[in-house]
Image 1: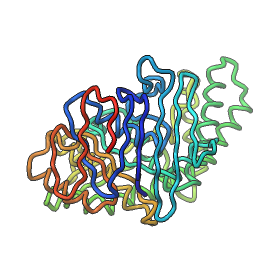
Image 2: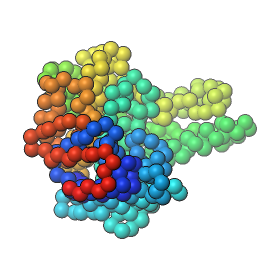
Image 3: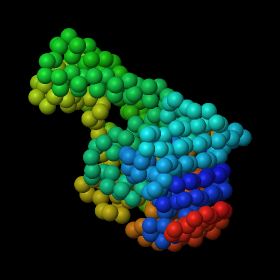
Amino acid sequence: MVIKTLSLKNFRNHSYLSYEFSPNLNVLTGPNAAGKTNVVESIYYLSLARSFRTTEDNELIQKGKDKAEIDAVVAEGELKRKIRIVITEAGKQVFINGKTISKISELSNCMNVLLFEPKDVLMFKGSPKARRNFLDINLSKKSAPYLDYITRYNKVLKERNDLLKSGNVDPVLLETTTEMLVKLSGPIVSYRQMYVKDINDILIKITRALTGEEGKLEINYKPFVEYGKDFQKEALEAFKRAEERDFHQKATTIGVHREDFSISLNGRDIGDFGSQGENRIVAIALKLSPYFLIEDKEKRPVIVLDDVMSELDLAHRQRLIKFVKKFDQVFITATKLEIEGAAQYQIKKKEKKEVF
């Protein structure tokens, strides 16, 4: 899939911008604070109706304005769709071909974006939540059943946590919600295990392309209970063992919502032993890997690489550029960057109206 045109109105620092993009490599350059990241933020927003930089949508509205607007024409093979998103203080509305949608999954089916942002370098040292989000977002885009399972799981999890916080826990209701969590957990763990296996098959090839070395990169997924024929029995036993701790903390302390994974490079945990350069290359490789797991080539995602060249030496930059040319549509932001054959867009500070 590709973005053919994009228009922004009162989005972040952009009063108005309108672009026609190349279906291949697009490079957005300009000084710091000019708004390069704001443009790719809007591209990411087309996929999930949320920002990768803030949880507050009202921060996307230009100061002094009552709404921000994103309009795009996206193509999936010969099929074209118009996406329009209007963000106000009261909320947001998403339109596809002029019709309001009720589920974000409808938007994700039209637009899929893979993102690398600078903070991804810290992915292996920070909270497990970022690593779980990587799995959940990419698995949800690849598999509608997984999205359904994780959505239902989160609803039941909230019910169980609310029950634990109530101070007057009904043991029958607690047992019921626990059994529901376990029932939903099995498919989630199974999907995660299979997905990690598939990614591991690809990671070695990506890392070799980016480094030129024969390194072994591997995700080590840590389910709260390994999926197998006795999963339900073992999961129920695990919840029972954690029950006293759950009562004490007034929260569900085990389950797929607490799982994690680590990444090893040549047998060493990248989070513990990786250099800054290694962490950056591994993060890039990991964030690009889901692209190759989408079997339908017309549904393969748009790639957004925000400030990806920072702290990469010349050799790694050249390898990365050569590698991303294999993808369909790619967006790269940088203060200065010229790539032969790429479409170049210069973002200027305090621009009023730019049409390319």
